Image 1 (cartoon, rainbow, N blue to C red):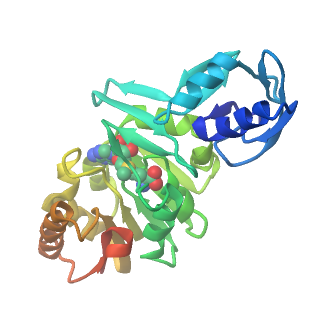
Image 2: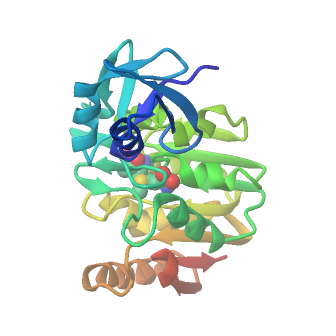
Image 3: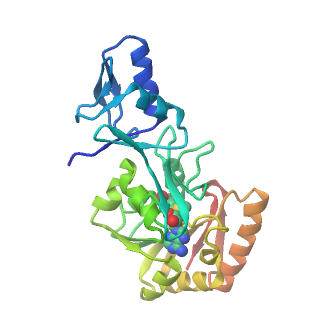
Length: 282
Ligand SMILES: C[S@@+](CC[C@H](N)C(=O)[O-])C[C@H]1O[C@@H](n2cnc3c(N)ncnc32)[C@H](O)[C@@H]1O
């Protein structure tokens, strides 16, 4: 399958450095750092082996856009950004030096300060390792937690509310397995409602990685937690992302989360500050 060329200012740096040195080709990633190809540098612009070309004006535009990634199609560059009519929120792909994150209504969906979205994902997964059996991932986003869980789990069910977020994931080279791995089943809908449709004790692991409290308050509420308690198998484990437990605002949210998890039936709750969340057991 031929994938489109997707670039950010990070890849552009090597193209411009090669041009400045007077080189006629450059090794560059056509997919935000996953793979590398040799692109031709010419007077008019840069040409990828897939045939896609950018002129120097387009290269300059990408260089200046530190908050966006671009898809190159038929000689045009398009920002990977979607206005979601369903949620009235703008979703976009945010470049980093490593895997990109997603911005929704201006909030990043992964940790990117002193870490990157993949490290962030692996830290979340590690809190409830081994990732075995059937896994529920309550908030798909770019699918990084679902993809990582599916490496060892039997099946991963992942829920996304926002078609705009799914569209951004579809254009993200780092999210390809979300659409290609048969172990991952995507469900579009509100996790608050979708979880009510699953059977008791049908998941060995639950990854609960919601957006910030202000974007999805009901995913931090007692009614939702009682559903998660119902769904989790005996000896099951749940990771709940909250935010920096040592910060004032997330510390306050965490105290409320822990109290409501206890009220929902979870008796053992362990703070995992390195993963910005808590783990609870059933
Ligand atoms: C922090 S991101 C999840 C990141 C994801 N775990 C990953 O690895 O990329 C939260 C996601 O939850 C979605 N979301 C928000 N409210 C939701 C809801 N009620 N049900 C399901 N998904 C929701 C957002 O659109 C966003 O894509």
